[in-house]
Length: 387
Image 1 (cartoon, one colour):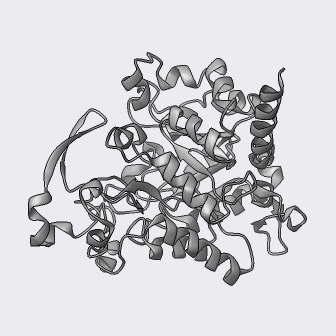
Image 2 (cartoon, rainbow, N blue to C red; image 1 turned 90 degrees about the vertical axis):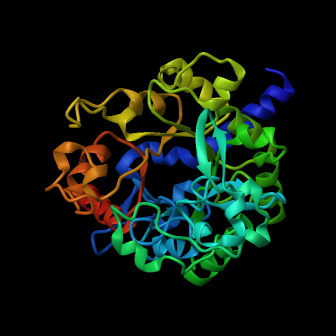
């Protein structure tokens, strides 16, 4: 192995070690005097090893309780005990700033439709092969976006969240990095974040490459090293490969349905699907530049035609064998988002037996999970660890 290869291998292996403790499973968590899972304080300062396992990740904040990707949702996730906050999904503005929105189309997550001055910005674009109509962040300056306010994305399932419509503006990634520091100081423990780069190929074609902008901000704030409390994720493997050359942070490849193809694969003519990537050879390749995967829960336990859970796949064992950590997405309390075996009643906003669902997924050996309700996730982990 040549010098460059040796250095790159050490670089990748060192970052993987930050996440590697999670592969130990629930034994990596320690029981506090009250019976709750907590981090082993002897591991403080050792990256992901300081976090409880299974790790509870606040999906877009506490988005089951507040409009997603707002400082209010992020703050509540920490208050509810989330170990990491997914802050945020990163998309660019017209003038090159990074902001936190679920998608670049913001008609469903802001009050932009109520602003007559922006009526002419409504348009139709093709986003990763899908015709999408609405308002897009890349057509607004940051100053213009700051005049908007966030609102609940799925009010039919979360009518209680509409109480907070209009309360918070769209945060920038730099504001999130500062918020992270403020919360770390205030709480006396390191706060972790888990931002996602959204549609990297799409934005690179527009001259708004995400990876370089993310790297520049992380370097500015001293959060670009392998022990930094920032995990970066993307659905596009080539985006993660690009980040691997720019920063030292732990990196995670997100994986959707087995029959889907990452959009960068579509653009470059790579014929492989997610099903290929979760085979042992595909996982070994991912492990050469990333430290974890974020699979959809269906890749861990598939559902049958009736929507009920079947037998777990070998993904957890295969990924662990490749040295990868698994943080699947997303557990939500409401009936429509749960496997059919755990639904209770038919109301779209009613909670089902989500604790049963957590037990089923935790039992597979996953290292953590994204959840819209971190408070429920923390209690489910406590039950699992004590069980």
